[in-house]
Image (cartoon, rainbow, N blue to C red; front, side, top):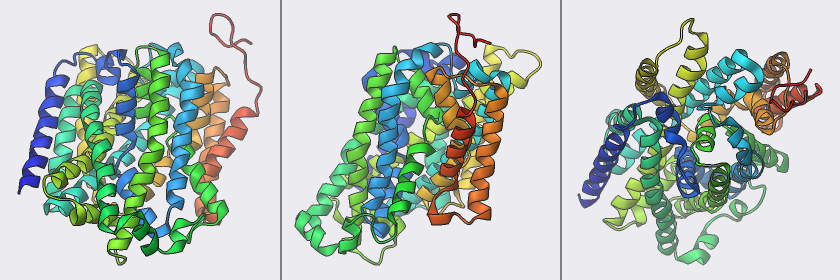
Length: 462
């Protein structure tokens, strides 16, 4: 009972905190980038809370339960991506001081066409990932609190939708900080108590089948593991919520430091959440695998601490859902409605529309969420709508490399075509994700045309 009280109190505090903070949001820019006033510590916390969703925690434990530590190594592709962004892209974000979205950045190179295409694919990606996280919310409430999935989704999703709809990025960032503090303590506690429960690390090593500790493991070939590493490196590169984090810093140095810290933090976190899957394998080899992390929590954690950890796991999912929900609304309003609308829309109407879209996307994601089985699998599906179209052109734009709008569109068509041909016509050879091939094809087409150099005024030279 005490654990339920702790969780309920935590959820109420998060909701009230988010609503109070968000009530001060009075403009669309504030809704999207929260005043661009944050230092590296806040960027580190909010970025980390955003990417550590259900897939990278519950989903990671599930995959390591099934396939061993190879999945941890694959997720380090994401970590490397963050480090590369911190080193090469984040320091250049000061050039986009007026941008509030991916579409604004892409418009500097590809005009309205680039902005609208960016908005469309941003919306598709964000809606898919929001659905995955909301599905995880329902599962968490069912497993830990015994609530029906629909009731769990209604409670968890309702809280996220309310404070995100009202407060936008400002509410998301400040609730992310609280959520990050809880999850960064709670998840490691589960592993510590789990290892103690199974007789220490030596007991864990002895109980887990040897092939789970080896690379590439019982499921992957070396080529398959390398392909999965690339999938996590490319799949979430410069996705809208992370780009927004690059736009909310007070300066480029703070953005770069916060991003680097987040990338470094992700490496031990992925190892911790994955090893919990092996603890679950030791406790109950029969599974089910998708409940590996919840099973360990319910088995090894003492009262009170169990409530704290459950709150941490809920934080994991909520902190990712709110970020992608906000980004979906920003992409739709700023990158689709604004450029396609014949007449300009007022600031007040823009903010109202963004809040309405947040509400609609959140409710729609509930329906999508009820069909989800594997969280990591749905993340990989969502990446299909991003990497083959956006990663190379967006990175090139940030780096100052210019191509024509025609080249951008041609590369996007080539990337999407290659993705679906690889997956559907060829049957995904060697288990390599189609979007990895699509991103490669997109890059080859995009970079095959000689770049136009920028003049001193920032416009492309002839």
